[in-house]
Length: 132
Image (cartoon, rainbow, N blue to C red; front, side, top):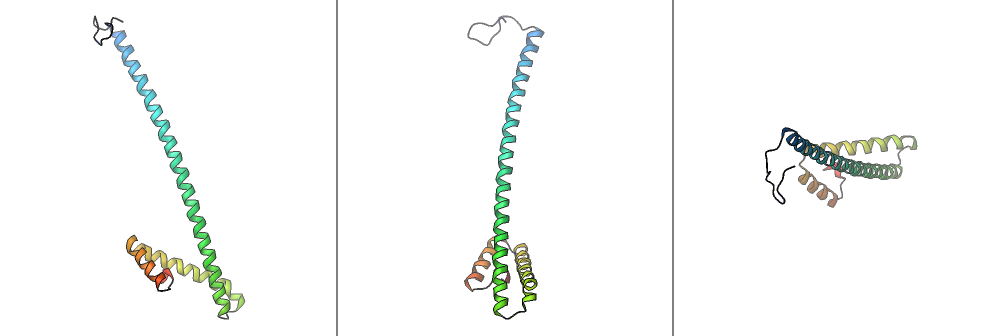
């Protein structure tokens, strides 16, 4: 192609065909690099999505376990208080629903750090978190 051995200087000016071949080689190389970057980004996106789905599933399981435990505790309290057995399920559902509504209102209205401090104080006083 007219290159000096070991240098980047041409011994003669490049022809239009040689210039176009060089440009095409650069475009091909750039396209290959972009394809590799896109592939890596897709893999990273897939991994992040999988992590997010796993995290959401874990949070959902924890929330379901928390609701079930709270409902069981409320049902036991209602039985001990002598509530009619026909009403226990409905009353327990209502109590759990109200608790989580109160906690959601508190969370929406309170900055996260302040909310955590308030929840810890409530737990220390033996009160439910939703009653902060």
